[in-house]
Image 1 (cartoon, rainbow, N blue to C red):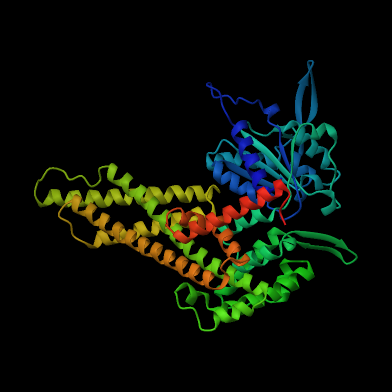
Image 2 (tube, helix red, strand yellow; image 1 turned 90 degrees about the vertical axis):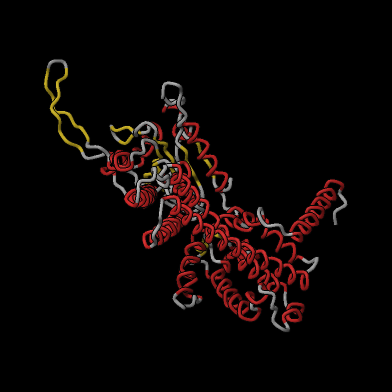
Length: 515
């Protein structure tokens, strides 16, 4: 299955394993909570989804790459203990607590999260001395004499033998006690994630037309050649930073991440063309309704790859605008939630009139209430960040909202108010100003979409490029969110036409008349 389905399978398992009865006991006993074993090629996202699952389920996560450990660190160190058996004293060997089990208890202590995931990576690549310990771990959920705490789910991951010559096969006894999930790379699933995570548009557009290069691992006389999803995403991060620093990515740098020379050369060549098309076609001018002279004629003579690249540039620029709108909307929604909580607390309810002193007390109470709300909000998300329960997107949102709330507080402190209610009216006015900015940003994005349709209709009406354009709008995370709110007549019109064409093709397949 693909990584998205595997992630959902694990989340569903966690819900089932952690379900409790009326007395607070787990419905499924620990012996029936089978460990989950993910098997798939390197770089497909097995480790990354564990962080996402932990954040989305709001449970703890302790992760280990077991190949970095020895038998002693896994099961603990031996020591001699004096014991009595049958009326006689003996010296018996005991073991200190496993470093791994101790880490789970430490996580519980530091975060207060009694439930979580213990993730062991590369579990089938351990040394010969550690292999029996791993079998015991999967079969009995323990390291040495120490059990994994109740409420902690075991998930392990490994690579198939063709990707790692150190792989050890599990016996049937072990396999009969685990849930094995085989994960395969799936470009469509990765692209859905990539658009949300902000993977560089050049990489997304390149892989859209070279899907065979998304995940390739080959063994040759020169060694292993590979291009993995992890490599593409890491390269994307570097490209973003280099762009901010005014630096360029060349073929040698691409090869450091995409260690498949043929693919690296191909992408490096594509990247040069990508920057060239971006300069030649002036996409920002097109989306502003100022299409440069000669662009239409140039595209009519252009090769298919060039036409696809220009369409990709348009989509990338639109998605960036949609992202800003969606993030602003999320910020306003969270701000509104915190401000409503503040209002409900009664911080801006004036006490009965009692002269200037009472008015002063009312406004001070309002300021203190606001400050208390802001401190509580900041403490809450910083604690969640420390516990690893915030994604990068959520962390960015919380920081932006904290900054916006702080700016309002500074304004309140510099102005004079006759009463607390006047202070609340001022807060409402400041929020309304931000909401107006959001409306302007949304309208600007809508206008850019309309200009994009003007351009596409003028150059690509009824062509494959228009199909690609609509497909990208229908699958992009931010474009889908934006189009749920924005009314675009041509978007719905083309969607109906494409849907009709797809249904017609399906009927043709059933009837055997498709060309």
